[in-house]
Image 1 (tube, rainbow, N blue to C red):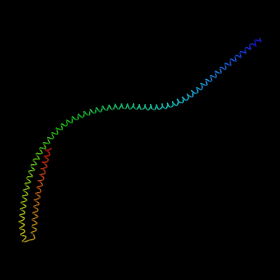
Image 2: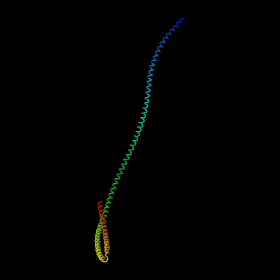
Image 3: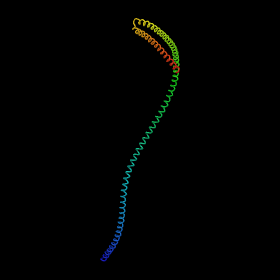
Image 4: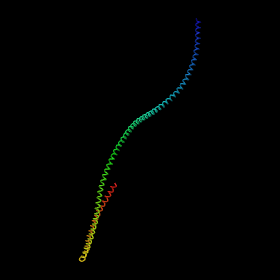
Length: 262
């Protein structure tokens, strides 16, 4: 029993040694594998850190680009807003132009209608004017005939009046000549009488009053001068009357010539 126990315990000890040896090898192998894995993991970690750093740089760059993109987007939005406003204004202008074109078309139609109406009115006025012109011409012709007849009658009257005036002038000239002859005869007679009386008075005065001869001469000379002045006044009055009649005659003949020219 004891032998068997010893052998069993020995067997167990050998088996345990064998197992321990096996476990150490396995552990060493596992350790080496773990170290390899750690090395791989460290390498991967280093690569990951590099990638993370690169990613961080890329992220920062992307953030900067995003900020720039945002600014560009805002600028583009402002541009788009301005373009929208411009387009809206253009649309409004287009609508306004369309409205203005429509209004212009309406105004052109009204203007054309007004032009046609004006032409019609002008034609009517021309017709009325021509009709009135014909009437006026007929009336003017009638008035001209009446005036010509009146002028002819007036001219005949003036001719008769001129003949009468000419006759009066001839008579006045004859009267003037007769009056001048009478006055001349009277003056000669007065001069003869004055000379005779003066001779008598001078003869008497020379006998009785020698100083009064000069006074008598002056008295008779004054009378003679007075007669001469009266004669001149009468002659001048007749000449003035003849001159007036001649002027009236000449003015009447001039007016008659003017009427004939008209």
